[in-house]
Length: 470
Image (tube, rainbow, N blue to C red; front, side, top):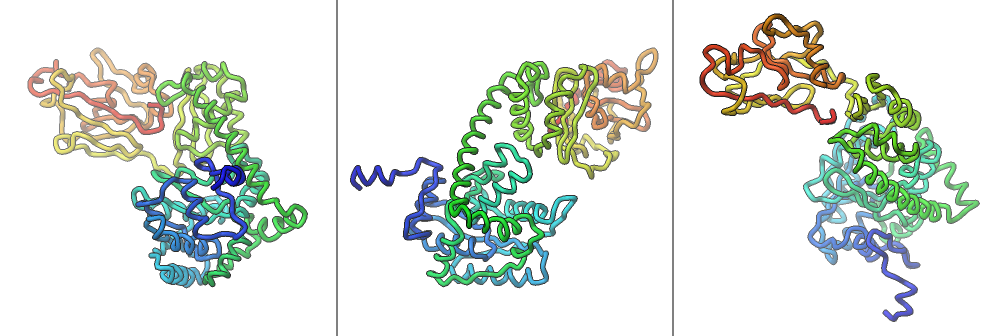
């Protein structure tokens, strides 16, 4: 290629989309797009989320045509949501279509549990959970989201009042569990795929649910987007460009948040004083990023304002908390901790621990209690009953001490156990007597200085539940 031609058709930077040529969508173009997004595909395994509709059928056909040259392995997965009487028939049709392209397709039936979410959101969650389970280690997931899907995603984000992350919509490559989700068709329109499908005489599996205007995305696709294109024919192209600009801005915000959090981190918690020193805008940005990095769903705008404001300015002894679906932030003194919240979680049950057989015991609320051999340990194993009862605080428990008793409540306060964690502290008992409180207190009856306590020694180690600031 001449220097002049190279200037007219510059190679895209890594991660940048490849412009579609005038000849339209093709297997050759798709191979170039994948190279730009993920580098070489040789020797890699690709799995297509395959509905059998126009978009995924075109993607699968082009990948099947390119795989010999590009040297990748290819298969497809069809998720049957079971929401229509004909869904099993459509799944069979989709698998037959894939077979004609010489691609193996596995159909997975899922149960869509709404749990207060819209049917659209619940079906999407069930679909991606099934796809995540179906992937092999190192296998990439490809979806057939198009330029038109991107426009709908941006419109939905605007209507929901989303921030920069939401308005950045879908990226060409994003993290998906331990692998990556790749969307190579984001700058391809449905019209271009229709032209490709006609040239290839592709069979398409119908899905009447795409015509249901009760679904927000379908309403935008069928009613709103046509009007936008009638007035602004390039609406999807320009909206996609805006999404890429916003994705860059989101990257800058995340880098700023990481810089702030490097100085505010206190283990898995954050120091309240460091957060209060920030401007309100920087504070909200850092908190939003930190909550997402902890694996929690992002709180809504109102709750984020409450966290960044009243929660951080409250008295140190107030122990305020903010909860939202799936997550909770609690403040204990000068530390802010985040944890997941399972609304359906049952109170912990009593366990029997045969520590001679299993010196480590997984606990029902998360975490582990372990008895570790230690020549300098404080526990005399000859004095330790087996099995032990593992119980949890109910209120009013008292611990035997020389000259009297100590209230369990007072002990937990003295040892700085966070209030929300106290119900998960394992108590080791024999009969009705508490012999140990996790690894923070031991009854004299099992200590090495007790009468007849010669012999092997050990120490207790309590690993706290994940997400509780440890």
